[in-house]
Image 1 (cartoon, helix red, strand yellow):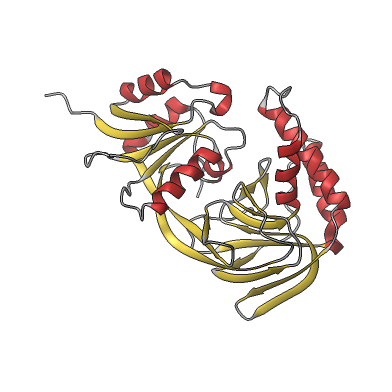
Image 2 (image 1 turned 135 degrees about the horizontal axis):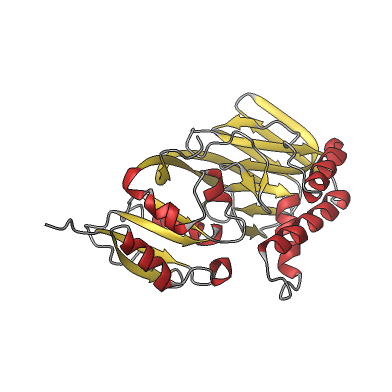
Length: 306
């Protein structure tokens, strides 16, 4: 007797990755490997009416689609909790890359029968107009300024991801050279860092923005954030790092992260982001950040990077 196909809820962003993989192509690949697909576009109510026999939720798209779906799960208090499989074909794919997940859809799906589950932490932020959550990073200074700058640029002429990365890195270098030093106070356990800074990033994964590996050993399931603080005194160091990346080198980020489970940040400036969302809630912030350990489970290849 033929073994019944396993049911997977597929949430697909048809616009991600320059439309590289269509709905038909993804479903065909999944069927080939023994998976029945309950398809829904990411633009619709993607977590409605999930069948009880659903094995796991597959998210096909970029970092934005992944984050949107996971936030929907959190907002539903994990009522539809299932292991999550990622089919990354966005621009940066920082989340999947941090987990060692293959961008080739067929190779990726072929590993699902012999997967392991990777715990994935979620960050919680208190002190904004309402509670917020993040799965990639929360930060102040350079990177939210970069997001805002790129949002204002005309990028219609850009056709390829490589060109998008080059533009983002070029803009980040300009911003780093001119960004004003901001008074900042970071309290981690019994340690207080009080300085004028260019950026603070609370990293849950290893990569940020245009695929920059800011925290070499960041593990989204280890129960710790990796906190990156760049004081104004390290401006030239930061500039050199970005320039080296632009020049095609693979430098290690020169500033060592601090591990933390909880922390408080006072930032006397306006530039703040939570994942890919810019916050415009005033000219200064005081936020408390806590880690919700192993809230999610992500399907990864047994041979994926640790």
